[in-house]
Image (cartoon, rainbow, N blue to C red):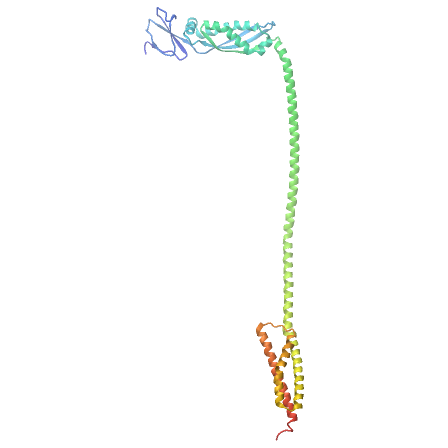
Length: 372
């Protein structure tokens, strides 16, 4: 808007043209806000409050008489208070950056030469921060009088202008550092060689263990293959052995069965027949004895009665004889009944045989001859 002026954030607006001073200042200072300014009667100028950089390179002589070439950088700007802005505006409003940098470099160069002249080379090298702080403190009053403040002062480099003094000072440390570096390299090489040898040993051990494991695995594999190859014939041999064993058992069972069959079909019947004949002969002999007694008595009734009385004893003798003949009965109770029935039948047959013989004898004795 016409007549209204606003400074930039890093600027201070200076308004001149008033007849009377404002707060002791020859002009009005506006920072951070705008203001109406009467055209023609007032004049508006702007002072930069941004940070500036000044570089210096100064030849300084130490207390030892050794010349040093010192390079430094100064970061500076206009102070933020009204007094500093007024002082800087009166000095630098026309040529701000160039004049500020030049004047700042001159102020710091003088104090730098003065302070370096009171120190030795060793102090300057070891206490560079102390040197920089002393230069800033010595320059603060003069910088404030021109409205400037210093943000930082950094010494970039210090050299002895090819006299070799600094290098001579550094030589022992350099040699020490080199020795330590050589020792460190040797130790590092030794450690590397040791690590390499250990790695080779570990690799050899691993290869040996691997070879042993491979040999073990191969042996187990060969054993398993051999067992697998023999498994078929062994299994077949076991089967054949079991078959032969079962065939032997079957043959023994068949032999025992055949023996039992022979015993029941041939031997036992033969023994029973022999025993029967023996019993029959005994009965017949007994009958003859009875017949002789009967003939002596000439009593037919007595003879029949004696035969009947003797029948149970004959049957008992036959049963007793059969009991001692060690016969084997295969059909249980039915077989026992058959044997008893046979014994009784044999007894009846023996009775009939005796009666027939008695009748024949009686016919020979009583019957005088054939009837006409």
